[in-house]
Image (tube, rainbow, N blue to C red; front, side, top):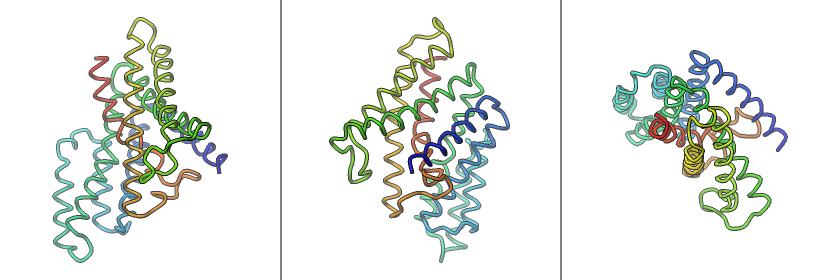
Length: 259
């Protein structure tokens, strides 16, 4: 199982690294695909049929949010369309379902929109990769430190396997990785090391909160994994849950600290 997880993670990381280097169309398409599948997984947890009109509306709006920047100003269209469907499909689709699917579509897409915005900035490659590396460092540190030291559970009612020691280990590794990568990639003297430390720390904290948010979502719908598409990891949402909450925070923080 661990080998399977590692292989999937390495292949996924290589694809993301290549897309971040290429930027533009390639990165936008990859992010749109990830966001679309995440929205489908949320719909599946809600028992919304994959080929239903409400799921199609949510996925189309998810993709538009990622690849078409002006759609950030028209996100309410998604909500109104889903509300209209509660009338014409009232036997299959409720107001509560519209609210959750609307939130799920924004949840799945906005992070990737902010990452594309980061990629277009000066040092854009560095900023996007810094976000991913901080998330991956948090996951790696939490996994190995948690296994080595164990101890008190972080929030057992939501995620039974997570420990306080793992959370601390992931946090510290993320800060170290962010400082080393930031100073190396941008160059000494351009920015101060503590700025990268702050970014790594904030990404780690909100990434771990994002992980817990997705765990709470799965518990609410009583599923173990959000999907099955990634061997050893479950669904796309399982793999990118930390990023979905941390990336928008990181975007605004980077703009504030470095611009």
